[in-house]
Image (cartoon, rainbow, N blue to C red; front, top):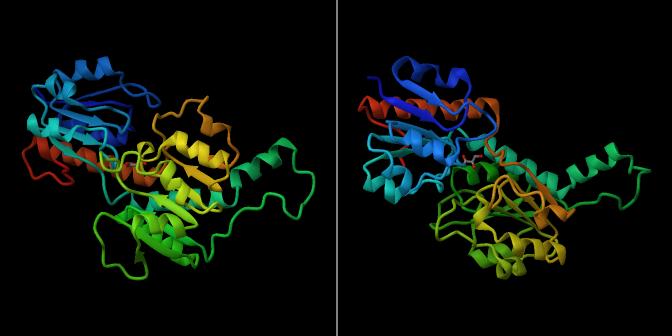
Length: 316
Ligand code: DGY
């Protein structure tokens, strides 16, 4: 009997073709929904490998249900959706997809920063809706990017790639990280200092118990009233109601959000009522090339694990 691989969301044929030659591949048939919890638990009973999405909660209940499971390979660099303690307890390998998404995610981060600063989406809407009546001296004015100060919270590979882009725009780059790095042309700042002096605060840190809710009312209060908060990491790092209040009361100038506590963000979420918020549907790594490279890493990790070869990109 061939080992069983269960994929929780429909992936392109070419991404799964190699695995299909060796294993029994079962895949949730839809691209725009992921396998419901009951289906995941049912498939886990037999699966030797789970190929998961960041929207799947892979917790102790899943590991308990999966006596044959050897690997969970997650289609993301972030893995806050997987209980690593439970994975270790059950002797299951977990892998992610670092490096290949660094440049695409940095591009999107910078695009969101620019779109927020220059009100690109709001401005585009005025053209399509017919609200654009004439050129106006102060119409659709935003904030300067060139020469501004960028504060990066979480200085890993994506942070470095964002810093390189910012330097091309003549920005002054600060970062805050758990550990100080020796990096050229970017300066370490304490957390509070970074919040106080940055024109753009970009969150790139992983979601962990330590970073959950790290940007709340007190932190937003420290920011300049002309500053923008850009979150491309995970929604849970920012207290969304505190952010809503800060934006509504003009304590900060704008926010660009690619991620939310609940995804998709509910349509009645207060943040969606504000004009000074630019929102995207978690597309940090969404380029064709990058997503296919991420999938190739997952497929290789699954094969390596099931063939008892050395597995790259293990997070546990
Ligand atoms: C990741 O890979 O963790 C990103 O959030 C995807 O955009």
